[in-house]
Image 1 (cartoon, helix red, strand yellow):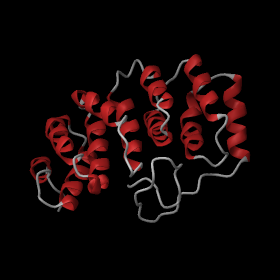
Image 2: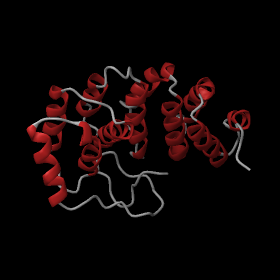
Image 3: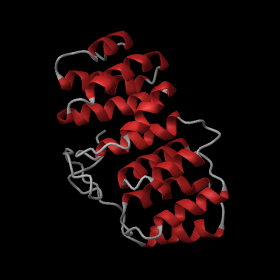
Length: 209
């Protein structure tokens, strides 16, 4: 039986990381703002242990899903830390967009792209795509300039293509045509494992469900 909100919140304090991860994943699915303060407290404890990166990933994603904006300061600070398990950056980028003001997507998106961390940018673009957030013309051009030098199969290009349905401008059509003509991203369904922060996403470093 699935955990209730109260049960999942209580389980965030379990001594075993898989139990805490399961609780965070459940709270991510529930997306109840009431879980936000407990998730933030749990994440502050969890980031002390680099071994529990998958649990950290789920907690960050849950905070974004819950819309707990008081977590934004910590999440932006974590985005500037070195993580060996770079999948954490994907969750951080996703949460930064979700927790920022909906009417101002441009500034947090640019912040993520300018950070120089590829998977932070990938997470931010994923959030834009998942929420179908509108972008102004200047920001669209900025994103396309960011994507231009990337390899055709780069996951960030796939995220942007998914988001581009509502974008306007002549460059958007050219970008989508290029994505259609090139190879798609290769993310096989195998368990993720930590990868070095200096690398791009690899088949062994995919997004946990």
